[in-house]
Structure formats: C-alpha cells, structure tokens
Length: 534
Image (cartoon, rainbow, N blue to C red; front, side, top):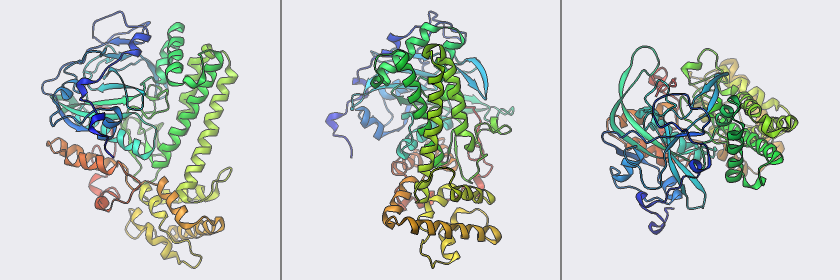
C-alpha cells in the first residue's frame, strides 16, 4: 500500500544530519587527490559535478519508508543532488577510510574510492539512514581510478539491492539511479579493450556503511584511539541493547556480528546468490550485503561457480566457498579487535557462534526448501541431492521451486515425479538414463519422508514456496534491462522493479522470466561472467 501523500516530503525539504562526521577524526588534508590518509576515519569530499544529471529510476518502496515523495520525471533538484551536482544544507559529504584483505592478502589502505556519503536522515520508523552516492567522483581513496561508475554496474546494483530486500536477505538498499550525461572509459574485462560507456550514479541507503576494514586499518596502523572510538560509536548507535561500551560489550558485539553474518550468508546460499568479491572491506559490520559488484545467481547448480573473472582460477569466492570465507573474514575482524576486547576466548566464542549459527540456519533453510523437517548433522537426502544437481546442468531456482509440484503419493510413477522438474534441466530430454533413474529414486525417498513426517500438504507447499523464490535477478535478465536503458528505454527496469517486489508469488504475467538462461546469454559479457571493472 502506498503511503499517504501527507506523510511524504519533497527530497529538498529533508533534514540532513552529520552524526558520523561529528563523531570521528577527520582527515586534516583538504586536497582531493589519491593519497595515504593517516590518523583519520574519513575525508571531507564534495561530489564532482556532472554535465546533465537525469533521474532514470526510483525505488518507491524505499522512498516511502524514508518519507520521501517520488520525484517528478527527470528529477529536477533530486537528480542534481543524487547525481552529485549539488549539495543541500545540512549535508557534510565524506569518503570513509578503511583497509582490507583482498583475495586473502592484506591490501593496506583502500577506502571509499568512488563512494561519497552525503548525510543522514531519520526514516519514518525513527531510524537513522545514511545516503551514499556511488560513482559521484574521485576521492583521496580512488588510487588510480576516477571515482565514476558506468550505467551497467550502477543499474545492476540498483536492481539487486532492492531484489535482495524483497527476497528477505539482509542488504543495503538503493533509492535512485541517475544518468550523468557523461561518458566513462572502462576496460570491462581488463583485456586492453577500453570503451566509453554512459555514466550513472546510484544512491545507496543503509543505517551505516561501516565495514570490517574500517577496524582493520586502525589496528594495522596502531590507531588504538580511533579504533575504540569507532567501536564505541557502532555499539551506541547500532547495537544499543548491548549497553555502555566496555570489554563485556565489545565481546558481545563481536558475537552478534558473527551471528548476523551467519544469517546473511545462509540467506545467500538459500537463494543461490554469489557475492563474487568477499574481501573484508566488502563485509558490513551490521551483517548486510554490501557492494554489489561482480555478483551473480546460480543458473546451473555448481558449488564451484563464481561470476568474477578475477577469481576464475582460484575460485576463492565461489558459491560453495562463501560460508568458509565469511568465517575467515570474521577471524580478520577478531584480530583487529583483539587488543580492544582483551579476551581471545571471547573472540573464539564469537567465531564458534558463527559456525553453529550458520549450520543451524542453513539446515533449517534447506529443510524448508525441500519441505521436510530439519535434522541434526548432515542429512543424507540433502547431501545426495547436491551431488545429483551437479551431474548435469540444472537450474537451481527452477528445480527447487518446482519441487513443490512433485507428487508425494506412494503410487506415483517415476515419470510423474520427474515431469514437473524437466524445465530445470538444460540438456534436451534430461534427466534421462542412469541420472534420471537415480534422481527418480531420490524423489521417491523424498516423497516417503514427506509422508512419514505427515505435515499437511498445503502447509508444506506454502513453506517450500516461501523459501524457494520463483524470480531472482538473473544476470541475463539484468543485462536486457541494461541494454534497454542504454537506449533510454527504462520500461524493462520498471518491470523488474515491480516483479521483484513479490519474488515468491506466481505472477503468471511475468512467466517468461521464470526460465533457464538462454543460449545467447551463455557466454555474453555481463550474463556469464563479470569483472570488478565498473
């Protein structure tokens, strides 16, 4: 339901605050050139104006929760501000300083190289929310880059942020997409073929954008006072239920970060999402999915699949590795907080909580996906299924969604059980032969377990459908929207925004998007694999 107009304000009438800026050490330097920034949590940066900002897309759902009226076509003042061409009173724009481990190696200072936080507002629920522009120009942390972003990456982040929210996955959000009217040069696959692409800026929204790397840089540079100030600030404003900051609260805070991270990653696994670049600087201290770069969705079920061309050889950040990498990243955060917490046993307990919580969440989510009861330890039925799904190319989303349609009657034939699932397989006639026989046997044993557990069928099917989305933001679908947007056609984007608000509903009018990856998309750039370039 749309919010009453009286509760929504024009963007330019919002009241902006600068709590983060007022609370932390500022970079004393004022030159907006790439450089090392010691002793500070952020640098003040004004977005670099662009030629012709124009509003391309707007999230009504997020706008209404923030209390912001939908802008007029083109955007006017909103496009100017959210495109980086204008700063409103109360805004104190800044880029945050942080470090991080990238692909397993300490990378030193990183920071917001193309992100600039404008300020904070209070949403309709009374919660503080930061508005951050991605692609609004160079900052002291841009290193050799220009701080800009292109339409393809900005539209992908805009759509996926909102899609993940409606899937029930903890995530940062996206309010708007603004075209800059300027070209940006990018070498999409780092292969010596740079191209001029249309530029765009996405406005990201979250209670805060603090990452594991914000703490790592302070620990690495022995900035103990800054580290404690940041930890105290995060606890007071985002974990206030833990009480006044101190050794006990620090340990409880790390424990909760571990728990939130476990839940987030379990949800990634549930919906077949692959982040693609799980560096510690891309891990939110609030347990939110952050930084939608070379992400992807499993088209064929493959534990080793990664969408990131940079990771194609090592596959460090592949689908099946995500739970372990999150644990590894948390150990890096534990190391950064060790002196502050002063109790390594407490930190180890937090890491153990991650391990236990992830196992619990993932077991329950898998049970819900299959419509069975969760059981302790490795469930042989699930382990066998994962092996079967990888023996021939099988669409994860379609298989699990259609599993609810498989008859559980004892007298159902093998073909009756296989028939609802055939659209999930890429090979013509699959499943067939020995694989088809083994899968049919698995389905029979799954049906027997369903009958043994005796959950009312309607209740079981509803549980399965709540856990198995019908629609996800497949890369080939996003690429079609990108291609259209490049021709000033935003209709596919608007269609996706509406579709992805209800990913668990049937929505038969959008049935063409409940489909396997078409062959034209198998090796098409943007559909099969992506790089960190944007």
